[in-house]
Length: 162
Image (cartoon, rainbow, N blue to C red; front, side, top):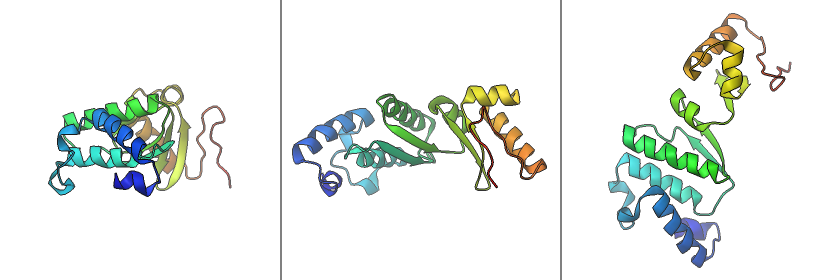
């Protein structure tokens, strides 16, 4: 209730949302468990549930599956996909390219703090001839390192500005 109250969510709404979030994240059995005693996977689920209690339109997740076992990571990515399918805008930052391939509609390739490319996986595949996003990433970074200052764009989606 604390996080909902912090955002001035009415008490009745907090109860309804908590029930939905507990179901979505499968955390009913941990409702009275101190966070410090939870596993990494459960802590991640609880953290995201807390972030959603006030129903934000945008969710920013930085490496949400870091340190999770395969099953916990899979469960969390399925939940993230559900949230996106329900209309939440999810900004997802990760080094795990397979998660990006599964979850992201649009992808930004960032290297050394510089946006190298922005587009869809299909656009990246067409532009580079590579299938896997990891190969696309390596190709684009290698190209950018070899040709300093060259802009990479897909269908005019990205143009380098001086």
